[in-house]
Amino acid sequence: MKRPVFAANWKMNVGPTEARAYLKKFLPRFNRSTDRTVILIPPAISLTTVVDEIGSRRKDVLVGAQNIHTEEKGAFTGEMSAAMARDAGARAVLVGHSERRHVFGEPDAATTVKCRVAFANGLIPILCVGEKLEQREAGKTEETVLRQLRAGLAEVEPSQMAGILIAYEPVWAIGTGRNATPADAAQVHAVLRAEIATLSGSSRTAAAVPILYGGSVSDVNASALLAAENVDGLLVGGASLDPVKWSMIVST
Ligand code: PGA
Image (cartoon, rainbow, N blue to C red; front, side):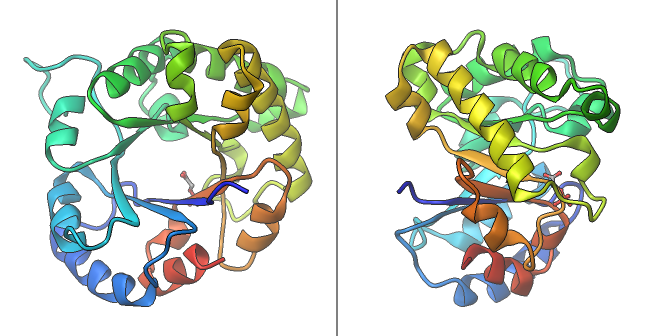
């Protein structure tokens, strides 16, 4: 069995002061662990604080960025490059999160570049895919997530694919309190894994890629979702904002 991955997407919450207080509560509650990976994904302004608080002793807790720009540097006010995120101590980066796609209008083509740029700068891309409610109701779930997966991986070398993380986050489940059922998640994850096998030309690579589920994960539903076939971890928004709740979820 792969080690499960628990990723906390704080979105636009938890500034540096709060981040320090959060880690002082969370770290002692999460026993040093070798059988699971925890990734904290704070807003850019709190990246270095989180990295500093974790320190060098906790190699079991990684830090990720929520977004990167496609360019390396330049006149892009308000943006952060992959190299800067890496320099600040990030090891991973969310690419194509539903809010980037649907609130900020990020096209598939940007996820193609961001996955490539992430790898080129030593960041693990966490490529997020997921259908909207109307797409699910129109029977277009698979078509949607496969289109997003293919776009994200379009410029990733097959040999690099084992190093990516995928998160299946149905848009209708994000922040709504209405999570996908474990069976729904298992079904989509199987489709994604089969496509990774095709794209990489290797079922071993596909088996190695952690596919996380996200969307209204809580301390109550975490274990059932994690037990579903092909669900290798969880990407958690709202329920990760409370360090006590998060410590329970990562101990699932
Ligand atoms: P949620 O968000 O857990 O609050 O539904 C998940 C996400 O958007 O990553």
